[in-house]
Amino acid sequence: MSTGSAAGASAPAGTNVVLDSPTTADAYPYASSGGSLYVNVLNKGTTTVDSYTVTLDATSLKGIADVTSCPEKADHVLVCEKNKWPLVPRGSAPFQVDLRRAKGALVGASGEIRMTVESHGVQLASRTVKVTIPDVGLVLDRLERTPSSGEVKPGTSMKVTSGFTNYGATPRDHTVVLMNYQGLTTDEEFSNCEYGTYGDHTHGGGQVRCEVEGQVDVNGSYDLDLGSVTADTAVLYGYLRVSYGHEYHWGNDQPHHRGTGRELRMTPRPASAPPGKPQDIEGINEFSVDSTADIQAVGTTVRQKKAGDLVKATVGVRNDGPAGMKAWTGSEPGEDPPYETRVYIPAGTEAVTTPDHCVKFTKNGALDYYLCHQETDDFWIDPGQATNWTFDLRVVDPAALKPGKVKVTSLPEDPDTRNNTAAIVVRTPGDDSGTGGTGGGPGGSAGSGGTSGGGPGGGSGTAGGSGTGSTTATSGAGHGAMAGTGAGPAVTLAAWASVLALALGGALFFGLRRRGQQ
Image (tube, rainbow, N blue to C red; front, top):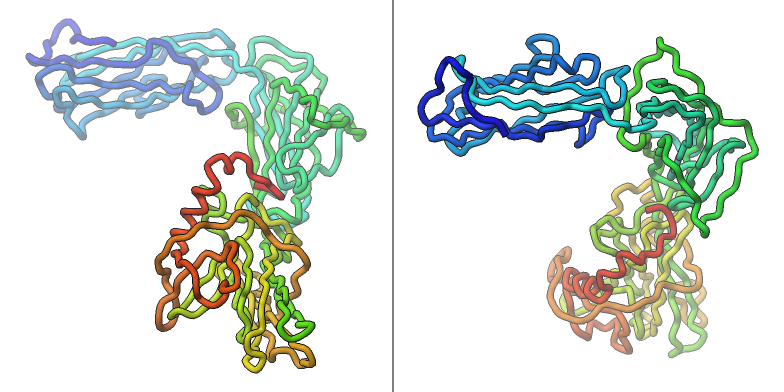
């Protein structure tokens, strides 16, 4: 921290300006918090400084580091005008000085930045910062994908090239290349690379370690043809990460194998090639996939064997693909699902028992529908994955039988709205005509089984309904003979969700079962 005015002209009485910053800094070849110098101009006096300039003299850093912050008045001399706001007593004015390693600079080279603060021709403070070039080893400065568009079609093959520069202090006789990727598969496997699983390997997730032989000179730049990759057909996005020079050892429980294709080689980058863009730690290339998931309502047709018998109606939803989708988008498991599933049981029936994951909504004291959800520990809904719920229904008035329905709503994207509704049909003995109608939509038929798990608790309240009257939610978990009659405790959907979150506990978030990609 440096203070004081220069010899000669005197500063006004009560002036005490201080430059506060580290005394040393490093210049990296890439943007980094460690490659920035943070400076504060402090007024510790009793007099307001109405205007001032900060001059950065970095002439000793020519060929070592480039300095950027304020306009450059001369080569490696920057002047920051601070005329907008006066510097009041106990006030401060922070600014950032960005440092970049100059092309061709050697590890260990250093120079200084001399900083001064002046006001009306009077120097108020000065400070000197030493800048050094650190050894950062091999740094990725190229990672390109062709086609380079941000969105690709499912199954698109993309050519990948990459490169690096040796910003270290010594040459090398080989380099280690690490790659990990998600949402894609490699089209070939190099003989000097090892391939293992990474992340969601069921949908194009993998990790690669390559050892590439060849001389790597100090400040030398090299490029590699990493072959081609193909976007998975069941994902909505993907990425490829690449880094150089970082050693990696496979874990004992991490299966991997060596490739059998051609050898991965590096070639010196021509001097005429465009300069690379050095990246801190690794490079990443991301893309989205032009695809959607189609959530289809799945209905059922069931027949009563004899009058008075209960019937099991298994209904649900199924992802018809071609892509998967997130099962929930909130910050907690089950929060903000991407769609709602409403089950309207057939008129003339009542639900004797209901699934744990369905909540009853009533309107004006009568059953309206059940709002059903899937297991909250599912992160991803795969193509072809179905969620089923089974209702035990009793026919209470055969003459009043009419189809119920399963209805999917609130989908953010819906490639086929025709299958959002499916019928629930109950047939009685001797009735071959069904209950009349289809329930409004083609839908499908549910398979056997269903979701299971602990249901929500009780409580009471009202949720917003449509039409006249009000709609009230009631927990359906473990309901008995009066499950579909409108009796039982009422609970708002928001309250039910809160109770569910408490029952699940925070530990569930870390033990999520992931059926697909996150």
